[in-house]
Length: 584
Image (cartoon, rainbow, N blue to C red; front, side):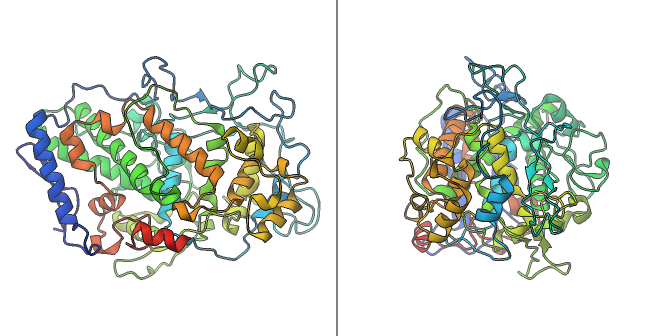
């Protein structure tokens, strides 16, 4: 049987780990040496603290995020209001959409965001895992559904003769847009403007795996005394036979879609694969905890496994994902718990964290164990929406996608989005398709997001006085000047993605979005009473403090260590220093 990271051997209360030999950077510890170091740390901590692995006397997180902050139990909970970094920019100061005097979202998308059939891989060597993990985490912390209505006054106007949406020059085409869910106790007057709701917990708490309510969490459990999560044949996600709330923008019967903690798990196959991977990871922990603590109840096992999986998600996000996105030194060091509200800022969820849309390629690669394209070929992104149950039918079907995400460079962070997202999101133009860039612009206006310059000022950054202040690329600044009458009119998302990256600091983002991302992820970490560094015991921390996403992939699939980089957020094992110089 293949050995891999986290293939557990239980002895003397120790969850030991074994690893197959693998290549590693010259002068760096081998994976086996890393594991030995972790085992030594585990044994040392055991001597100091006693055997406190998976102790069930500790408090566990709630599913809905409440009770984390003891002084403000609702902070970070599901269905709480989004926060603001800067005052709203509603047209009437109350609730009317911003941007009434600006060009429409589709027009700006055509002028500024159109990538056509070109490809611009990033210069940092980051892989498609950068945007895929970003989306996975987004679905852990943010959900603001549109509320469908018969009011079509906010639909996005399509310019007459638009080559994709209005080729027959009718001038009557619109892209459907419904306003976001908001707190209906707000939007009454200038002192009480409209505030949107986050429908899931703001914490990085694995809610996309487990759910943001006790009812959804219970429905996803096997409930057979094992502590495991439900799966379907092939060790895939369970099918939605109970018809839990679930997003569906495709033709598949709702009961035949997969179901997970977050309603968007079927959105595209790469995301479905990530959900599948972490359900398997939970079940792997559950099986090992059962062997270590055979007297534990199913509840004991489930909650202990959940605690470890949440910790792994936090570690990967802060140790691998964020450094690849914003640089190794962008985040301030963790200095312990601080009481505060981690609620999402609308500038983050409504603009800055939509940065990943510019990173996505038009193809999802599917690679076999020998590094070749699988017989069924790679997937066009437009063919990967809401059809995962058709594409994933056996256990090994997720492996080619996981290899492919590591093999392809993500697109550069810039002002452009590939055609599959700008014209073919969830369907072709005129047949259910959307323009993701236009939706981003319109959603920002729906939320009353302040302009790009107003947010910069709120962050303590200098206001741009000319379009060339935003981008040193003449073509980009000229496009902005064509789309906006004044630099003060620029929508936050458009301005943020148009900024120059900061390669000297290892950041793919420009300074505005980088500042927002740092601000938000610092709050999500520092205000979390259950943050892994204070929630886990010393022996538990010793088990996983060096975990990587590649470890979890190898532990739960037939992918061999040599088939993917140690740090899968990069297409190679080059050092961060070398990568940053290349990005420069």
